[in-house]
Length: 134
Image (cartoon, rainbow, N blue to C red; front, side, top):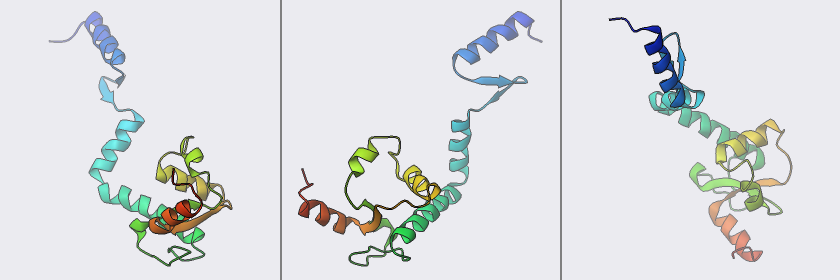
């Protein structure tokens, strides 16, 4: 049984009110939904892409090695970017809250100065020595 034009329009308005876009009678996903579906179907690709970005940035700021510039720790999960003069909390309150967008920002801006690769232990020691532990 075919739907009348009024029924089709009512169904369209209901879907649109729910935020679902409709194209040629089929439900099309939003960009965020497509990305989430892709990550679910290809978890290794997305995870490896993020690790590659992290490895590139940490290697640049680690003086050519993917390791802590103070102690030499080289295990990737232990490493992160340190703001040499502080200010990381202030930057995290802005648009670059998540790690991957921050690494992408560093790379796309030509690796600006003022950052270094540190392991978490060295970062905590640095914070304590500077009195930033409050």
